[in-house]
Length: 305
Image (cartoon, rainbow, N blue to C red; front, side, top):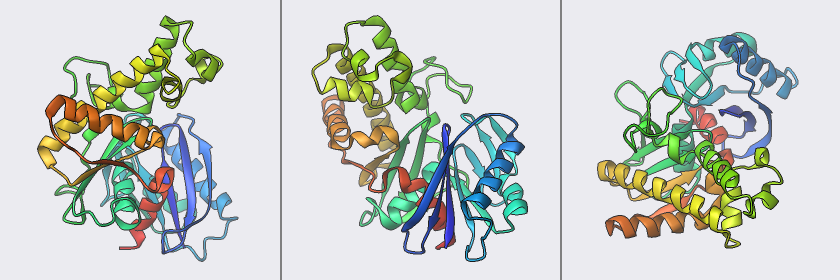
């Protein structure tokens, strides 16, 4: 058995995974930002509780973490959405759980899971974008995860999409993440709700604080003008981002994961059509197969190589 941990900006998911990738059980808890070492210690204690203090049958603990990761030394160098810097998270959790701990960028973990067990099976190359609290990117070339010369990550979410655009948690402006993350989509949904008090988004979300990454998409399906504008803008931002990435890597296919990707073909078909409208290029885009479990499974895959 392997423990896979998917560390997100809003929640942390822990799963017990068999060697064939099957998740036996999983639990999660909400992220409360604070002292980073204490957050790591809380995760370690949660893993122990999750396993009823018995890790005797556990091969190891894999962590999928957003941000720039030093895999060799088990360090989260920086994670803007968690406000972590130079966190020796593997060492902290190993001290608590007394098990080997490895770490990988969360988008790379998702790509690895899809490569081994998901929608990436059968493709020689693909780029995976995770559309969650932030935007992560994982790249597969010749059936292998591309991580750079020093096992660092390809931070596609922090490529500049719009010069001097919306501020990003990384400190820059105009990043892909600032326009294509679920966080950005929710921001734009709430702005549209405030400006359009007669929008059906108010009925769907009940109140503005309950608006989420599905609100605009679901209400747009009903023909709501304000929601449709939010969706169209989001699709344009994502399409421009994919065109830019495609010009560099030219993969066989793009995979979309994360919360926004739960719209499945309702999102991917819109993006494909917009890309063709903009560039006359036919870029194949498909939703991830493992959905929100890809981080857990990908983290576990660190012990399956």
